[in-house]
Image (tube, rainbow, N blue to C red):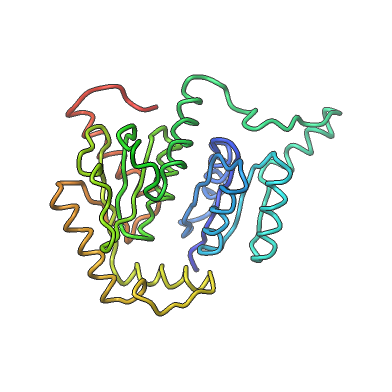
Length: 277
């Protein structure tokens, strides 16, 4: 059976949606599922970035969206791509409306307790979204974790997954022809983790992405020799700077995130201080 890409998209922290997905997947025997977690999707620009990932990794879309315009745009795009999409709470909400004799309030995240932990998690997600793909490097010192790796090494989905666990995460793509900002080498607070993967697997992932975007699939971006040099360049950078390295070739996003969290906990144990939620 082919691997299923399961996209979980929410306009809040998405923890309810994630729990529903986990409960449903538990009914199956070792399903081969890669989960892509997209919380705090509240703008057209953010949704459009997520939709690019739908194109690159088509699969099942589960969502909880309150804003009608955002929801309509998502549903229209899913229909265009031929992707099955399910509004996870609609059936339950409609049943309750019928029994209670009243309409549900359209409130983002209304089901969550607005405690300090909730707001810290929201803050972490917002920080992570704003510092994706090397953006706003001037603020990297505020991060808990910085993920570095070549293009398509699962930096963004891993960052978002970690953010929903309360970690502020920034990430940067490593490009041989474009050196990273010098600030990367002077960070004190964030733990820098390098993500690496097998070149052949990376070529396959990149080819699939180019094909899904109807772009030319014969460039240095997917040339095996060039990709091998690119991965080797990143590995040398990790080694030269003494950064922890995680090979994501055979890891799911959840497994990669768990490995990052373990490294972070070990680091905090050596240097005690305030812990994320």
